[in-house]
Length: 255
Image 1: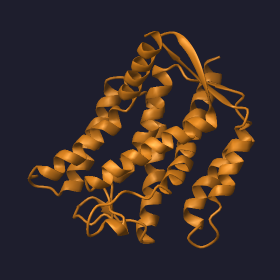
Image 2 (image 1 turned 180 degrees about the vertical axis):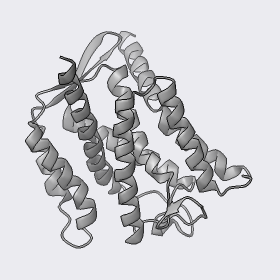
Image 3 (image 1 turned 45 degrees about the vertical axis):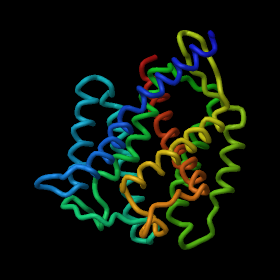
Image 4 (image 1 turned 90 degrees about the horizontal axis):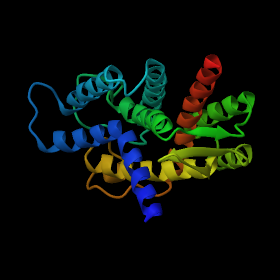
């Protein structure tokens, strides 16, 4: 029973950390079935995301430093969206006033919500890092993972080489977290895989509600290819390393 209570508590803390993603998914579902006045659906989603972001900072759920990281990840995600839609990887077929090169601005918030989850979970579960690799190793690896999302369209896809590097670099790294005052730990590389898998599940929900559309979903919705898990794992690593760097730098300044 004690283990079950800990698991329920852990799940509850995770659910609270997913507040921003839950709002996005709920908005996707509601705006698909409800008639919307004045503005296209994509623009209403942008307004909802902006209001949600404002409320989270206003209420203290996110700090200003965390907002900076989330905004950075919003821009990183938006740049990736613009490139990927240009290459035909997926599309946003609906109309919208607030679009850049065919990409609605709300799309960046879907990436930002991943960083928001990490920031929330970090605080709620009192996350700490054990044997974190040197900064000079982490930054080039992060940059290489992100750049590969662009370069593999013109060159070979080195994602599996990068994944192998991640395992090597973080082989001795652990993440510790607390549930009801009891400390647990998990291999860092395994946590990347878990988060990436659950984002893949979220991606299927998002595409079902028309957040975006893959070429094979144009006529009828179908399950997102399982291979996309590897992409999300690598993207999670980018967001995690950015958030972790903020936390480590912030922690050193406070010492």
